[in-house]
Image (cartoon, rainbow, N blue to C red; front, side, top):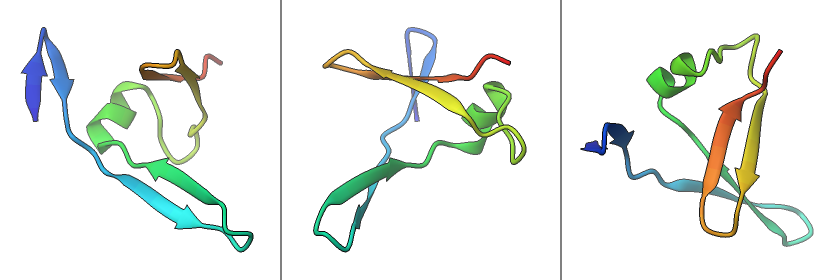
Length: 63
């Protein structure tokens, strides 16, 4: 874990799964403290993800 410009940064591994048709999908597990900081829990798990071609930004869905 590193702090860069006040941001906590971690190196994470993608989880790959292969479907029956041969397609591959990826998942990412985030640390529990990050999920808690976004207000996410077992009852509130919906996030909004945006991709600009260079980076992915994950935000909690606004209620």
